[in-house]
Image 1: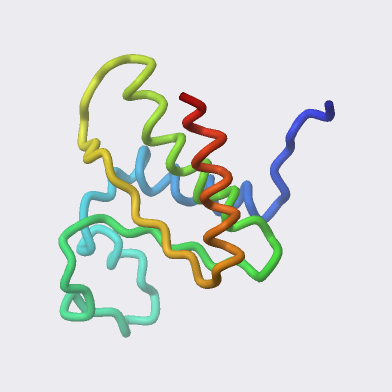
Image 2 (image 1 turned 60 degrees about the vertical axis):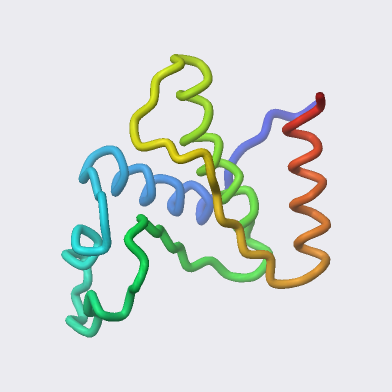
Length: 114
């Protein structure tokens, strides 16, 4: 079996999220708004208090793999090291089509074989 390798856009998206989470230590919308160079984003646009990371990727570039990797990056250290930081135990994944939802269900079954 061939070894998995991320495509360039996937790697860039993951590196951006990891940088914001681990290096910059983004905790809320106010931390993220510091990166808005347009000046068009305001705190009133977001009612939520939870962190949200959004990456812009074209159709067919592997957004699902990026989302899966992000979930793994948050979940696996908790399991391996049995430590709790800001782990909430929940992920929100929005599936735009029934085909995407079916694919995500298959990933979920593969990740939870028991």
